[in-house]
Length: 583
Image (cartoon, rainbow, N blue to C red; front, side, top):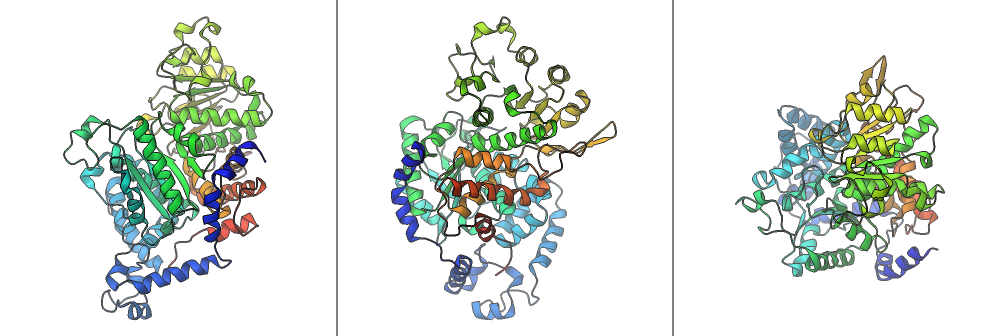
């Protein structure tokens, strides 16, 4: 057992004791349904119809209506869930914009979770951009004006740490929370700081967890930490629903985070805690503080890195090249860019390359240009990638991306800059001169902020480039070949990662488990097909999630971190998965 794991075991001793008292029975699914039935009988008819976790609407049978006091409160015809789903989908199709469709679906979400997820699972590829990215950016920007209340979300006010426990208890009610997505919404990719409006990012992320991986929606909680906002337009907006002051920094902020973690871990000892869209000044600090103590994950730092690494593996499966032979150029040195670079570098090291040699193969470009170690504005995450200025005779020119490409000769170019159209024809042509099959991933989103389009990259490289984008991209037809464009979408990874963590009851998320998740993305599509994608298309996300979950759970078991009673990790994953069916 390594030092980190030993320290971790000590840190979670108290949580393990609590966890042992809450072990599932061997018949945990039956127990869960029994508890759901008890909740039903304890509520009034009106409370049942207003509880999105219990409500079945017109699908309540005559017997159920009589037993629960619902007789006469619903139309006489009893519908199946598929009839309800077809009817609701037809209504949704009458909406003329993505925003209207999302608002309509939120009404269903807030009244009947099972029906919502039945529809989502039936139309996962169509619904994902509606309920999450890119439409969610518009709902966040207009949240205070639209204010569709996501029921059972927790709003934590940094000015009232004494209310943390009450807030979490109120949001949970009588539910056992296994998964929480928390944000302070300072660094929402592509749109920045949106304060309390960012609660929608937590809601949307959890929607994808359930639709893609079958996490029981009754066991999750979206959380926003209202630490203020530095967006002046929000501070000046009388409709803004968050704190009207600038963001709290420093000791008060981190004390609040610590109190939050201690409280939520105490309330829910089997919790998996997901951090989302924290600013670059806080995200890595928070993750590094807690990742060796509790089961926790930051999607911007770790998730984006895993899916990008999976795409690189997909490209190398086709070429037969080694990861350790690649030269990596990161364009955009924020939380996501630095996190991805760190993940790919860690994998190089795990494949046997000394860390010092691995760093020589990584270059990072941010707003200053190529990062040098004499710059005084580097973040802690950027500093390891900074180079010596004296090593570059044309250092003064390396504020230009094309000049950087010519100087460092990358085989991999990954964009997280949110600077549109910066991967130019000249840059692509230069990369094709460096390597026969360049790997070029413009993964900034939304669409208007992408570094390049997939179509341009395929044309400019004469079909040689391996391309994955951060947004959904249509198939590109070029010279008789249909190039299917994989999406470097974190949703290919984090739902299955969460399912594996929860099913195995892993006490820690390790680098080895993350590596297993990245490797598991291969084999879903046939790499021998002309134009094959380097990442599985999103329509396969349910299958991908199972594969990722099993890889993560098995690795947790190998490392002695799985606490589930079930020792067959594939069975544990299958048994844990929730299906949108009425009970």
